[in-house]
Amino acid sequence: MSKKIIATENAPAAIGPYSQGVVWGDLLFTAGQIALDPKTGVITADDIEGQTRQVLENLKGVVEAAGASLAQAIKITVFLKDMNDFATVNGIYAEYFTENPPARSAVEVSRLPKDVRIEIEGIFALA
Image (cartoon, rainbow, N blue to C red; front, side):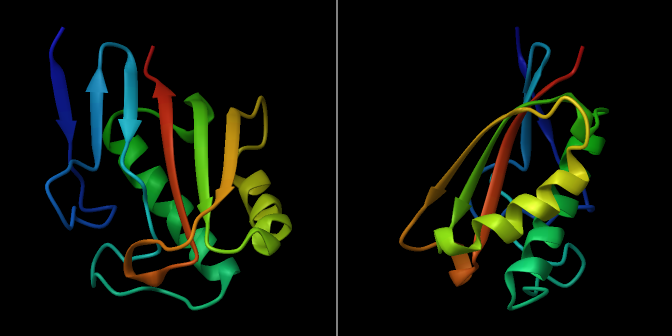
């Protein structure tokens, strides 16, 4: 098996030595997505609602570039700056993962890149 690198203009460009996504066999592993506008590289919102929506749109961009959809998610990890935002994030998340939701973890972390409030990464089935 060999790995295939996924790169798309529909998600923020990598800001370090990593790939937006990597396909290995029938699995896609995404890098953590934060609330950067893919076109400007600027954080799109200060509030958790706006950041969560942008993060999920960025994740969707990477997944679609690999030929998959969010419906093919197996495992999602959500990193939150403040666990008090969980209920809000959960409500928005439910709009994107409507049926047969994936396994998920949500953890509070002390700091995220560019001091955003949320980061999300995932593993997706391609077959």
